[in-house]
Length: 161
Image 1 (cartoon, rainbow, N blue to C red):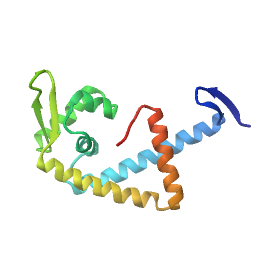
Image 2 (tube, rainbow, N blue to C red):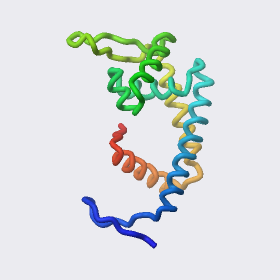
Image 3 (tube, helix red, strand yellow):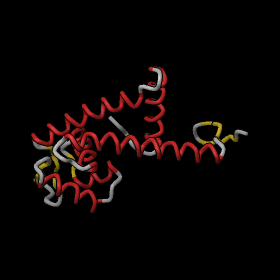
Image 4 (tube, helix red, strand yellow):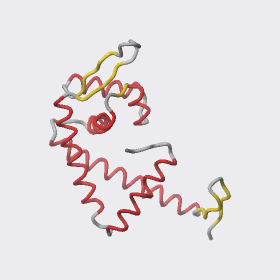
């Protein structure tokens, strides 16, 4: 049985409770497998980076310069945890910090040349891994999945470039 939900976007069918649970389990399993395998493979190849390092480098490479606060918000990671990640990446030569000239409380984060090299390797690795991951789907299904994932993530407030 399909229930309907009247909301600002019009009348849309709603899934049953069991279907929401199945979607949740599938998303959790896929996300965990995808992220851990992909980033584990890449991090093992690239200077022993941790999974969290790869994730930070990926965001920095797309959005630099960015403040630690913006990075924390963008990644939905607690500011204290982001600070630990940044410290490690600065210490290992992947990221540099520059104090804002007008507001000395703000530090701008950018990738170093080593960080840019890691970013390029991570992007190449993730692109290949994503192609392999999606190869079970027909091209039209891949396009549909792409659109649906973007739409769902926008609904949660994430805007990907």
